[in-house]
Image (cartoon, one colour):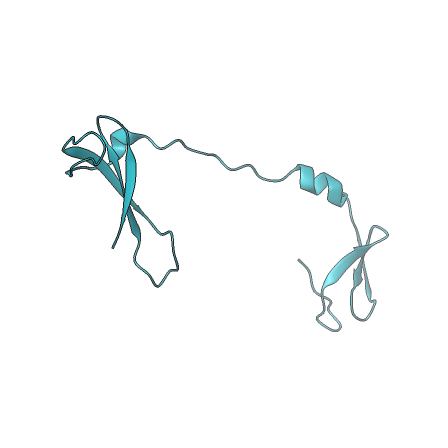
Length: 101
């Protein structure tokens, strides 16, 4: 993002040239990549599957199969000023549930 040297307003592209949106001052810069090409070059984000082997195991009874071992993790699911939610997953049957603090 660039700003005008004269008035400080935002520089926009008009007819492949950089122009101030407020005062119309031309900077002389030429746009080399069209905006549609920029959209095609968006960064990709890696999605990593949650691996249960890395979660801590605690003694907690599964409500489904009554097994006494489960994984747990915490996640912020509400506003930042509220406490996080604790999620549990049974080691045996993989049933998941949550507990609010």
